[in-house]
Image 1 (tube, rainbow, N blue to C red):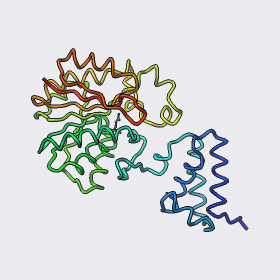
Image 2 (cartoon, protein in one colour; image 1 turned 90 degrees about the horizontal axis):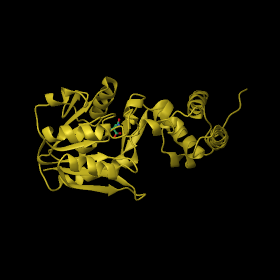
Image 3 (spheres, rainbow, N blue to C red; image 1 turned 90 degrees about the vertical axis):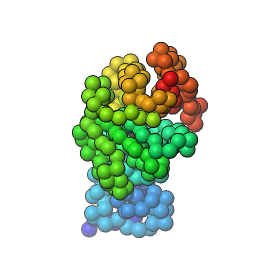
Image 4 (cartoon, protein in one colour; image 1 turned 120 degrees about the vertical axis):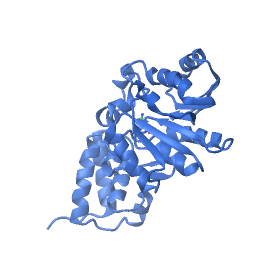
Length: 288
Ligand code: GLN
């Protein structure tokens, strides 16, 4: 007879396993994966400590654990990730939404309180976390989203349907670095973007989870980390309405150089918003 394991026993064993594999926060990871299988929140597992796992649950969990032990992010394993209090579908063709990006979205939401009927362009939509959150949080906003990746756009469209936004966000397959961007026959109040900003040098030393599993084109610009900001500064001049604003997430240590880049492109009121670690994280610049 196969041994029966309870939730508590399996959590202890799997925490140990993940720890030995060198996974950070092994207990939390074990709980997140098991919570998904048992269809409950991580902390609700504490009410189920004595519950035995059936064969099917066990074999699914074994598969999840071995994948996590190989450094696959738990969000790809369960196919979901939380952003701004909502659950989005994710897969290996999209970047996993990050908490820092919630700050970016928050800045745009704050700005929307000063204006009505905002027309917004989201560059590099990935899972669609930014446009979908903005569409749900800002009344009467009109959002266009672009991404170079067909697979990412499929995920974003699926996510938009999940939140009953069918057709209300205009998704387009466009490479921002190409002239296709000027095919957008519209001017915007806001350009928002969380572009690939890791330089090619830094990319080599990112965590294994990112290096081996997240899409490279979503993480690095294959250059000095500034390629997309320069492009956004350039095309923003065409695509923004007068006094339109750019909101971008940025990396640690990029603000000084970005101030120069946006000044040289004649943007005004350039400011940086800090994250909870006191790092300049969001760039805001206004078209003069
Ligand atoms: N807009 C998505 C996000 O912020 C994807 C960004 C990207 O792929 N660089 O998570």
